[in-house]
Length: 79
Image (cartoon, one colour):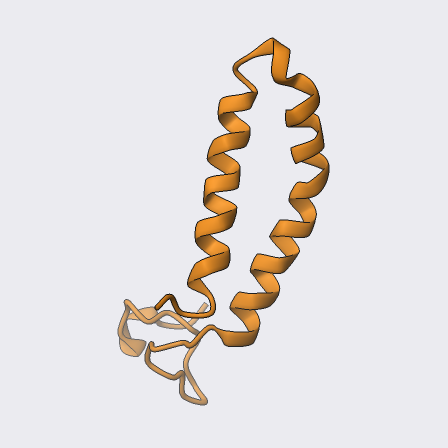
């Protein structure tokens, strides 16, 4: 079964692909315009679901770290 935050990502991605395909044909302008008007609601649904149920599996930052996980603390130096 899909995780809670995977389903909205798949649905919104498919929606975007269909929207881009509809833009290629002049006869489907009204459908693409309707899809454009509905897109912010789908984006809000995607963002809400990811923030609510998404899990971060990276390394936690310490008190003195700047947030760069790919660089050692000693190599950052002082700004």
